[in-house]
Length: 109
Image (cartoon, rainbow, N blue to C red):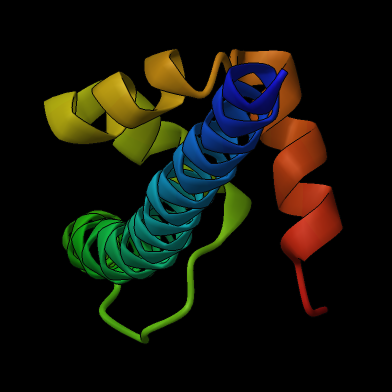
């Protein structure tokens, strides 16, 4: 009878220690995941800055009259002449109709 109590107590202690170990492991993984998400968000922000800078350079190249403003005609001509701009439009799935709509949305005038 005393051996049953001893084995029962030992098993309870073992399962308790195992639960603590698993809790620590899960906590460490959850913390690492949070850090990974934060780092990924920072990477996306950097990527966005780089892409905006690249688009800015493209827009400067297609600005035919050099007034730092793009007309619809300049945008269309740039879409036909500038290979890098064509690639951007292709990636964003923007065709000539969409280009007109996009210009109408972002046009300040």
